[in-house]
Length: 343
Image (cartoon, rainbow, N blue to C red; front, side, top):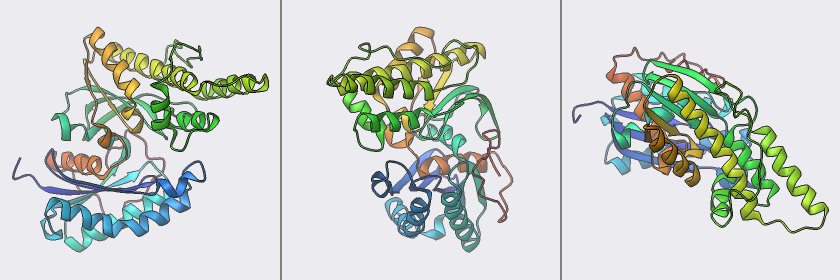
């Protein structure tokens, strides 16, 4: 696809300023400026801090991406930007920047859905998506099961979290265990020295007949378990608690994902989002997909967390599909539904 348009992607839905550049399904640059360290002392993302960090990081991060790809602004053929869902103030920074770049360069603008972009990014590593596929998206803000006949035009919600997202539960349990923010990588690391079967924690909505998720009860169960042992003066073996909690989460996620594949007779499962970087989720998903005859696709960890490459990848799909570009009046929509791929 050497003659495919060059698409600049801008992602600012949360705490990372991500700039990606792709040509077709070829990744040319993926540059990220994270404000995570600024949020760590608060134990979570502070929207106002994130917005300010995006403002400061936007121009240098775009310039760094162009330099990494060996390109100049004049080479860019289209601009894609996350229009939602996400933090309202953070989204506004990215959308305003994208409008400015598109207008200044005289190129089309595409406002895209953050969740659909997490699906599209896998193509940069594994090629075109099977049609259809089931996508399991797990992050700090989302736990969603999707049926994806065509990522550029047709995404169907099959299930979602009814309370805490998986990544949010990781953060809260990490705090209970005295582990740093963000909790996901630290729990994953601690769990490697523990046993996932040492403590039996609840599996929310595991057999309720839906494809929805619930992790609030699990989070509370871990906190109560720890509190009870501490009240009795017992020592807490953090690796065992981390491993048992993690096992409960990934057990539910993978069971529901395979249920969706069976229900809709789909033989390809894609896992995306920040929690997709979790080593136990990857291992258990592979094990269960192999047993079920389902092909598993998971992007490398650097493409699972929020990044501009995923936005550029979806933008490239929209360009290739001949989708009408967005207008300069597109809003930043913090609650943009997954069924709206392009705004």
